[in-house]
Length: 220
Image: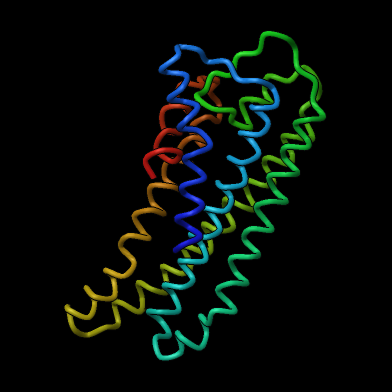
């Protein structure tokens, strides 16, 4: 929970202050270095948010499906290890994506049709070949997007079947209430972020992706 809170604070700090400054000053300029830096940390904390939510889903699965073994399975060592692995994967992912963007060449007077330096929008503005970037982006989306989502869905399928097996209504309510806040965060995070990328397929309207992006970058 402390890591999730830290990640969410950093996640919103990457985009919101700059966005508010842009609104106040009516200037939407960002330097090349500032854009790359913002993009790196945005990718880092997005992946971290994703992975930590997955770890929390596993935690809820163990708590509800194996309550007697919960303290043994989810010991401090395992919790620390899962968080550490999440940090390492996120750092390597964001570093790879950012270094690949640095290899691209850009024309002058670039305008990003977004309220922050979003990776896909930046890559689309490049004058050089972006095929390797597209391959890495799609692979990363599958690995860090679909993979954790599959883990969360599997955990909750087991949780639902365990809750249904509880005889008393009060027991079912108590078990489900421990997952409600996490399930709400997961639904909002994945619902809007998947909507952005799936909705952008076949359309070149950046405004259609910028509006729902506010949901998973600010509201969540």
